[in-house]
Each structure stands twice: as C-alpha cells, then as structure tokens.
Amino acid sequence: MGEDQDKNASNPDSVAFDRRRFVKVGATLGQDAQDVRRTPVTRHELRPAARRLRVLLAEDNPVNQTVGLRTLEKMGHAVVVANNGREALSLLSKSEEVDLMLTDVQMPEMDGLTATRHIRAAEKNTGRHIPIIAMTARAMQGDKETCLAAGMDGYIAKPIDREELEETIAHNALGPDQTYLDSKPDTLTISNPSRAVAWDLSKALERLGGDEQLLHDVAKIFLEETPKLMDRLHQAVAAGDPTTVERAAHSLKGQLGYFDPRAADAARELEEMGREDRLEHAAERLASFQSEVAGLMKEVQRVVRGQAAHGG
Image (cartoon, rainbow, N blue to C red; front, side):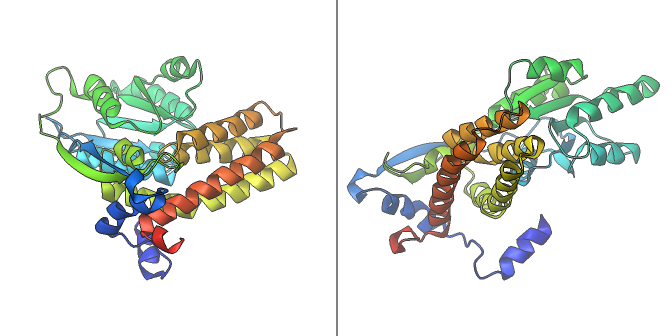
C-alpha cells in the first residue's frame, strides 16, 4: 500500500483531497443547488477496545484490506496483514502471536476455509485456539454453516459494517466483560446529492463510519483497481472462462459494495453465472454492467476531485 501511495503522490493525475471541495461538490452533482439537502451524518468515532488485540487480517481485495485495516486500528487493535491464506499460515508458523484472525473466504493461492482447517489441525498439538472470523461478500445461503463447519468462530458479511465487526470481535475475542469503552459520537454535515444522482455520497460515507479520509483512500484504490478487474472480466467472458468470470466479478462486488449496492448486485449476478458455468447471456449482462460501473466511476472521480462544476 505504501508503494501505491508514493506512486500516486508523484502522479499529476492522482486524486487530491480537499475537504471543502469534497463537501461542496455534492451540490454541483444535483440538478439544482436548491435540490440539495444538507443532511447530518452521525460519525461514531470508533470506540477503543478495553483490551488491545493483535489481529491477523487475511484479505486480498485492496479496498476491503484498507477498510478492514483502518477500522481495526481505529478500534485500538494492532493489525498484521496477509494477502491470502498461505501468507497467513506463513506468519503464524513464524511464531506470529495473534489474538484474533479476520479472514476473507475467497482468496487466491489459499482460501480462508482451507487456511482455517490447517490452523485447527495444528492447534490439536498446541492446545491453543485462535478465534477466527470469516468475512464474505457472497452472502449465499449456507455460507455461515460452511464457515462454522471449517472451524471458524464467527461470520460477518462484506462490505464491512463497523458495528457488526465490533460486536463480533467482542463476542469471540474480548469476552463479556471486555467490550468497548464508551465515547460520544460527533456529527458531520455534508451535502447530499439529489435523488437523480446514482451514487449517494452520504450513504457511502456513512458505510465507512463518517471517515472522510478513509472514503478518499478507498475511492483512490477503487478508481485504480476497477479498470483492471473489468478488463479481466471482459477477457474471461470472451474466452468462455467461468472460473475467472466468477473471481473477477467477486472482487468487483466486494469493492462496489462500499459505493453502490445496486452495482454490487449486478456483479453478484455475473459471479453466479461464472460459478454455475452458464455464460450464454454473460456478454449481454456485462455490457449493461460496464455502463453502470463507468457511470459510477465518473461520479466518484467528480466528487473526490471536486471537479463536477467543470464537467469532470
């Protein structure tokens, strides 16, 4: 991630964040400034944990990785990141002491389910038990049961919901008497675009706990990674490769969930087409999906760069 940030800093096209323009630009996206409502968005400063945990985060999607890392750190925990299950096992084998593992289910090289089975097998000799919480964007019937059967202790859906994550960690790793310290929320007021705008800035910000800097960082990654994933999806559909269609659509779904749930649902359709090896209508669905994603990316660029008034 550090290399990406350095690269963006030297790139004249990289996204520059200006809070005043970020707040103001919501009005320019509406049909008329009078259509814009100023809506208070409650921003809960993440409550610090009563006990600081060392968390192993296994996640390959850069957007979810950034959100997970920042959220856990704001909760007061120390985080070690692995890009897949194999890296997670390698860290643990090198005596990396962790109190909790938060893992994606679908990852390249080794998925979260397989990694969990390896960890549980090793624990039979050590007597330890690392609480493992699954993260998945699939939300398919039976997913929770599959995760628990593999030896996981908890399950949360993606996009990551801060309150759900807090509760799940408290239940599985902190114990009933060690939850989170109370803190008072503050209020952030932003401009809410008119309903004619597909992307709802206020809801996107709310999904990330009102953290403007996190939204900015996630948006940069989204704008960088989405074209690559779309290219991969187009190539897979053209080649009739259902496995790659499923994987690329799955990654897109995970990123889109933070910005536009409707676009995420469209990615889910393509993911299911790949999983079920029924690509006969995939090209047609991909064409409409491409239009949705292109429009969303344009809106994200306008809001983050603050250039909507100049036509993008």
